[in-house]
Length: 191
Image (cartoon, rainbow, N blue to C red; front, side):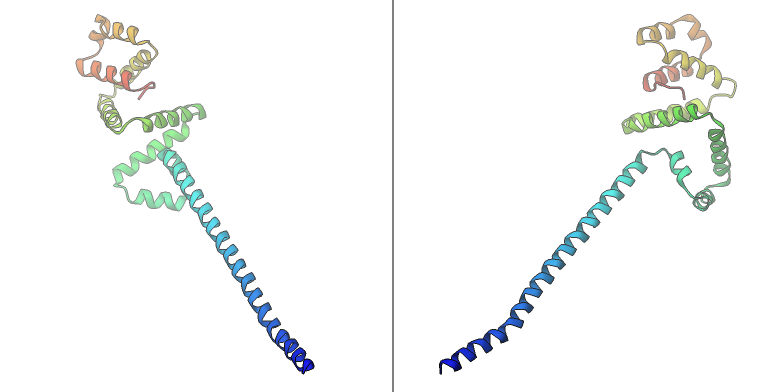
């Protein structure tokens, strides 16, 4: 009888051994699955962070930098969407930009960066000033630009004194005077 009990106990243990190892193996598999899921989630988070960083970098880029990053096919598609006059104008400006020395290109990028830091209402006012400047007759633009360059290098009291001088008032009409004053107040670089 004792032999029978021992035999039965051993048989039960032998029968339970595979079941125990199956349970243990399932626990290991579940643990591995959880680890793989955590790794996938971490990769997804890293990919989202990288994409967000790329988007932030793109947002800081100037339109010209975004243009330069485009493939030739993307550029052609973008140009094809524009009206012919705007397309020609854009192509001319791009050619002018490409012909600038590197330091002048950097200045333009810096100016754009400064512009993009302005609050929306100041950006709107600045756009209005640029339109006003661009609507000046061809012969007046270089004169106004030179005067602006001179004004921006002055301190506030010097600028005010200069703008109140008879020489300044006789050289520029009231609209140009106001535009120069607004440009000097808003920007630290020429239009």
